[in-house]
Length: 529
Image (tube, helix red, strand yellow):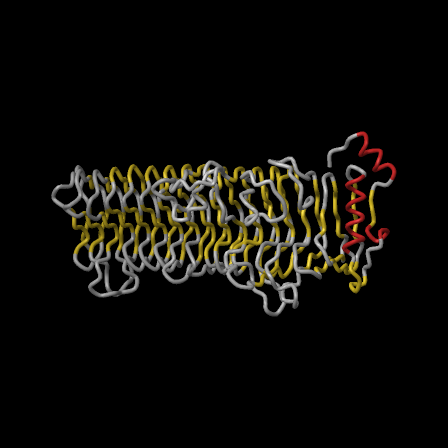
């Protein structure tokens, strides 16, 4: 905390405030909320102090309120056990009017078990555990939040410089209609519907947030599940973004929807996280134009359009046993809002269910998809549509449930040096774009599922492409009983094609090469046994 002369003098008088000295009862049979609140109020009146809660169980029959320059520590073995229907902790008073980031900040909340008891009669309605807003310098660390009904374990709303680290979010109960809840929600001060603790509702977003070393998953409490979503948002205002967000080294287990849903974020880094058994991994989403409230500006008037989001890096994450809710990684823009400057590098994806892809880009510009391992997807491994200036390079694709790599309605992009093994359908498919280079790729075993009569190919440049260049690729028919039709197929409806130096040797369903006569072939392509 910031040290001023007055605060230092207060700490000299008593550097810490023990909640039991104010009457907090550790037996778990008496309401300790008044006593803990008295300690928090004393810290407020001193201009800041350290409040400690010793080991034991403390019932709380009302929402606790923490104020600026306070450190609240639950010691090892301490549990705060909710015994009312509302939220457990918030920063400030219901009637306060502190705009922007001028509210109660410079707060540390750490340690212990925060037990929401969401399956207990009288406490099953939707409620928040820790709800913080309009503040600067908030730290939440080294604690566990368990069995939250309906809402969120932590909401950081209208926060500048917030840290959530080494926390565990275990157990969720959906009382109805809350299958979109995140364990950690980043939100902006839009209305009392989004943030009910206090106003003002001035559309202040979150900036400079770090979430690291946390676990999101199920608890062992009967009647609970894992969180639907791990980290994310589902409210926006045109002209506002959540910015400078870092999500690193967390574990997400069995989240049935998006583990991370970055809705209208900019300057986002997602690094070193582990996703196991989640319905979808990381979703990047611009403002959804079909939601009038989300397209509204600060004046509350819907604009009917989205907005760009930019500068996103997704690196070094591990995705395993993905579900069928969505893709492992998806970047979803719209016609009025593009995702710009996207880097997806060095991730490992092993398994998606249903027809879900591994990596999906839609309405994206200036993207780099490099050095990822994408295996055992239910659908296409890497899929791009309505995008431009994209580099897909050096990825290893194994056992895709549909195509290996697709690029549709895309311009000025490269597919270079990828290794595609045993896709169920075509290895690399390009359609209806311009100035696409397909170079130095290796495709083996297209048509892995042995479907007779299916038009599968090693590399397929389909209708409507302008000036595609297909050079120095190698395709092999693999061990499938029913071979792909051609190793390389360039249709005659494409224009300005270049094809040379491709190696399509082997025994194919029809032939190694089916290249339209209109193609510029300055060097021979190879085929045959």
